[in-house]
Image 1 (cartoon, rainbow, N blue to C red):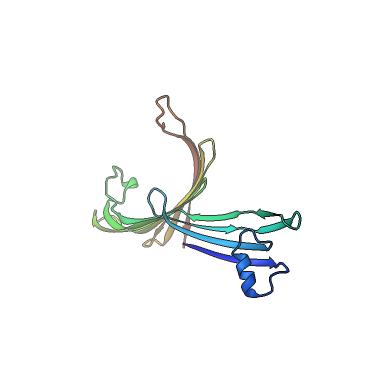
Image 2: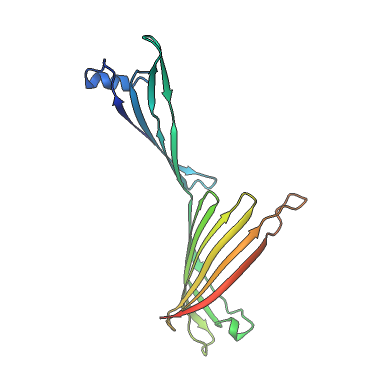
Length: 214
């Protein structure tokens, strides 16, 4: 989808009417200073065909007189591009009571909805994941589960394949009315083995837990 808007900054002496000016604007080599704006909208781009792109071309045309018969036309194209690489996802989440220690498990079967939105722009990746879990079965002596989990996440990948990330994991217990928040910053480095297959990246992280009572 393309839209073109042209704006004349200065008309020549021969442009005596709007009609004649419009005709000159249609002539790419007319002795007329103009600044056309061309807007392009593209959709279904990318390997998954779910991306969109907007491009605005600013195309100033400036003539320079060499003599009575010859002009030099300067036509510069300045593209302004913004592109959305947003990937949403949604589905169910089912926590299972598989912990071997009472301190590590709620000992409950649960279910709930989960969703994620990811945006990638150049070396940046921004993600937000959320879910809510209700327990429906399990050890009756343990407290029921009614919790919301939030995980915002941002990463920057350098040209050296080094990734810097920052994320927070927040859980709100609706029964106990209490937040549990963990902040995590990490650095990862991707290396390639001799067989040209990616090896496991090394990763250094620091986690800082804290809680907030409401």
